[in-house]
Length: 93
Image (cartoon, rainbow, N blue to C red; front, side, top):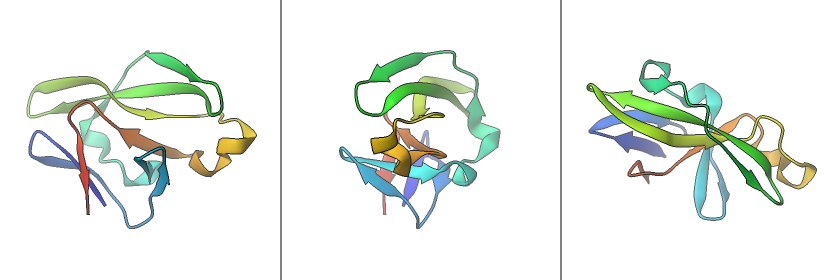
């Protein structure tokens, strides 16, 4: 699977976990040169508190475009250490 935004692959892995229609990539598959800080947080009743990353590609910022659960609840343990995308990031094989 590849996650692409603004014409650039920001993550790529053959090892994704599909949860609620979202592919969660291993954190190690992130192209760190495109990842920047976000202090955005949301809460999911069954997964826990989500933290976010923004993407910076070719001088364009996509705020809060990636999320992850640093301390997932037990029922979501399979996404620990993984990151998913939205906000126009295309995820495809």
